[in-house]
Image (tube, rainbow, N blue to C red):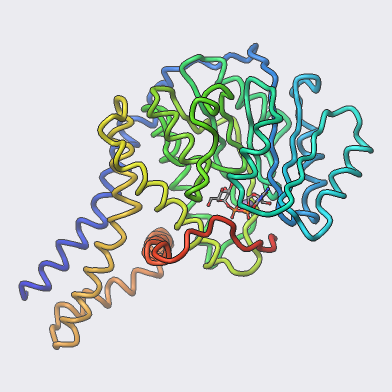
Length: 370
Ligand code: GDD
Ligand code: MN
């Protein structure tokens, strides 16, 4: 085989080997490990639930119903809806809902102009009086009545600073991609959490100790993954930021513009990991390994695959039979779902890094959900 073709094979082995090795390590060493933190179901702090909204008129009422249906003591809950100049009547829907449900304390904060989700969250924080702040997207659902109580109980251990849910996909993405992606990522989130902390949080349900948010000066407005970045900074402070297996969320997948949605979210993750790289050296314990692995996998590894494919293509054009055969094998494997899911994710991450060069998508286009 030609030297260039061999180099491409080596790059492909690195690309696929790194996540497989990480995944194997997570599964064998950490996934079945005890948590090292103790849930305390008796811990019932006041919780401020913040719901950021931008044109969510179609979903906001059922979201509020969902919150009101939780088994967490009502007198310990305050809901803060922060709306950024929606044009579809979202704030009016919130006001009507509050009139029909006087039993639940609700504050509506109306921003005169839209400056993005994190900016809105910081505005809402000024009204939050709970010991715990819970953020939840309007287009998400909590899987059961005890989702919030379960998540809060983990904060009963003083070493835990932030808690997020695991995600159930609702609706199928293109060719089942979304579903496969979730199975793999939930196992990763859980194993990382057991080892120390996970650097990826979910806007469907993200709980933070309010005093830690204050110490950080609120959510970051210069990058998109407000939830993940905040959780990571809390882990860097030495607390645990964990995804737990007794709190599940359902997220809605856009009914159209699926690829655009995946690219934007990938953009935010790349921004987040690129910004955490410089804190790597002060990451505590196992979190350093986790952060290094995830930053590599999100920021660098996708390019390794692209480079391998480009070399093979170049060699194939130069009539290398080996290169052409390897390319054909890579294409044929797309029939296999986990591989297809993986390759699609790499494509989104590469597209995201490129797109980050000219836009950060801090205030993104609203997409209709299934
Ligand atoms: N107040 C306010 N202002 N809310 C906003 C704004 C804004 O400018 N932009 C979006 N939101 C609200 C939406 O109404 C929704 O409740 C929530 O923020 C999430 O927005 P989606 O449009 O549903 O985003 P997503 O689900 O695709 O984004 C996911 O990834 C983001 C990072 O890429 C979620 O997990 C987000 O929470 C996360 O920030
Ligand atoms: Mn969403």
